Image (cartoon, rainbow, N blue to C red; front, side, top):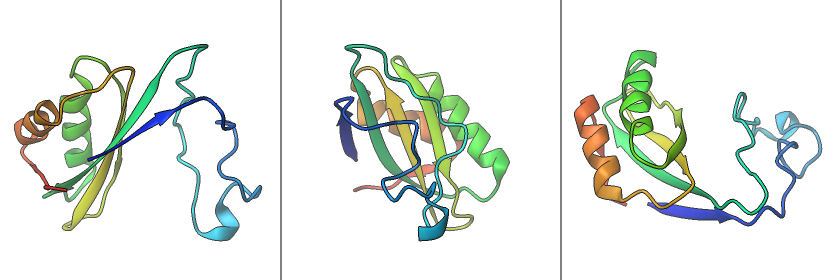
Length: 114
């Protein structure tokens, strides 16, 4: 698990620092990801690896279970069908990894050890 605390120093409206929206450099912006920052609010982004997901239904199941955890503001999934997918959990306070693991397990998938 990797936890990043956003200090509010970067422009969340640009896709990346390359100035081209990321498309020319092979790293596209996350479409539909809202800016969650408000003045003085801490935003925590935790990244996890998940095995067993193969389709959008899998993504929806994991998203629904993890989103229900206390403090979670949003969940995004980078699906790698049949391989190890990545999920990012955005929250206003730390969410214990054991709770994320339980939610992923409830959805029917496996959180991979870091």
